[in-house]
Amino acid sequence: MNSTDRDLQALGWDEHFDRQLSVEEAAYCRAVRVMSVHRGKIAVAGAGWAGFCSPHIPGAAPSDLHPTVGDWLLIAAATLQPVRVLDRKNLFKRRAPGDPRREQMIAANVDTVFIVASCNQDFSVARLERYLVMSREVGVNAVVVLTKTDLTDMPETFAEAARAIEPGLVVRTVDGRDPADVAGLADWCGPGKTVAFLGSSGVGKSTLVNTLRGSDSIATQAIRENDGTGRHTTTVREMHRLDHGGWLLDLPGMRELQLSEAAGGIAEVFDDFASAAAECRFSNCSHGNESGCAVRAAIETGALTVERLERWRNLAAGEGTSQAAKRRSR
Ligand SMILES: Nc1nc2c(ncn2[C@@H]2O[C@H](COP(=O)(O)OP(=O)(O)OP(=O)(O)O)[C@@H](O)[C@H]2O)c(=O)[nH]1
Ligand SMILES: [Zn+2]
Image (cartoon, rainbow, N blue to C red):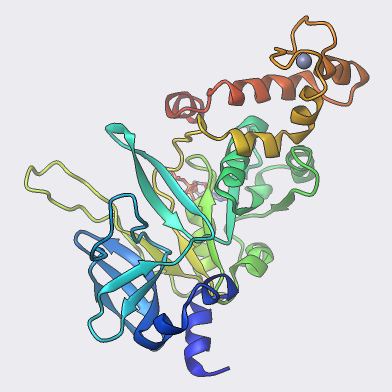
């Protein structure tokens, strides 16, 4: 492996991106990762080089791929002009604040999302399920991290409740302030790996991040930009290097869950309900008092639970729209 490959791999370059490069592009372009997004420019890093370039791709339509943080971008080696964004592994987006019809890109190409909850009275299976549905919808690997194990005598009870959400769901319990504990997450944070954190306020995301960043804990502050009116505030979105060689992507605004279009994610997390419902006599069965309801039948045998039926219904009914989620996470 040459040093160029090594540099790119340390930034997250892999087979998924490599195979998208044409011979021609390989000759006149260089691949760079978008490290941060600023007003009117983006910071990018590639093999042995880092700098700024324009976020605008000449000739690209509004509906085309435009670079966001975490993206892999081809730029012309001679001019540093962006050429195209490579196909993403996944993309986190949200409704633009103030304009629900517009979508805003948050971050791309996350390998693992840590869904964080705490082992105390704030713990909620329904909330974990929401974040899991969002992760499935985005198509990103999810790991549940339960913090504040030092505040309970029975962290395993919380872990069991989380594991029951989905067969095979990976759940870890940690005291987020303890580096030895948090080292258990290192496997997902190694060289070239990109991670992100989801979870309600106060569950310990920043604490985990600080512990993971170890020596490299440069404080990154939200930067206030002035758009002339003096009111506009934005946060620079950027990749942060982790101690284990990986990268952290912030997901600002993702606490306001928008699940109204997460049918795919809901069907994955609730696949037991989805497959039971497929057996109901009526295709529009509400799983209430209809005859031939396979969901009710499964609840009677104990294969499914009423509690999960309720949570499934709430999610499927679009209860996860931002307002409802905000109320709930307060
Ligand atoms: N005892 C204990 N306290 C913790 C642990 N993790 C975090 N805390 C404390 O919980 C409080 C909230 O932690 P944060 O890391 O700020 O939570 P957050 O998820 O980043 O919150 P937001 O920034 O509001 O989204 C802080 O006082 C932390 O010191 C833990 O594992 N054990
Ligand atoms: Zn039914």
